[in-house]
Image (cartoon, rainbow, N blue to C red):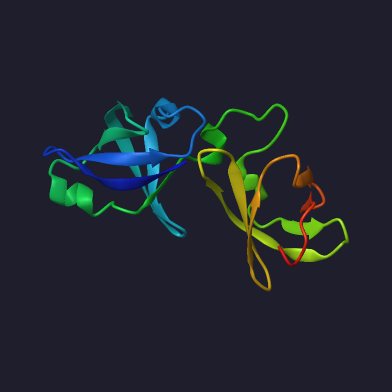
Length: 158
């Protein structure tokens, strides 16, 4: 749901780039999991606020910038069960690992991650090579979670 960008100030705060719909959406959760795949640690959020295009936050146990600096580049997540139920749709995490198949039935690869470039979300698809496919209706025909695939209007030579 975010990534620690850098320490902030002299009291152990961190600056976080958020991937939530609302910039301060991550502040709705009283604790965060910080780390990377397989190496997560839970921290209680003591304080936080929106700051520019992201947020700044004070996590329990981090009182000096040197300690906060150790979190630089780490991902910020919350447990799936803490998220609200999706009414009509899915979370980005639901798309990671899905096969991406074009209209000709050619499997381009699997979704490795998603990016937000400010204008739209982008699927990062890894197969024989890497494709960056804008996640917009003109290129993404449909997402079939149950079938484990995304159907796209995208040629192999794009």
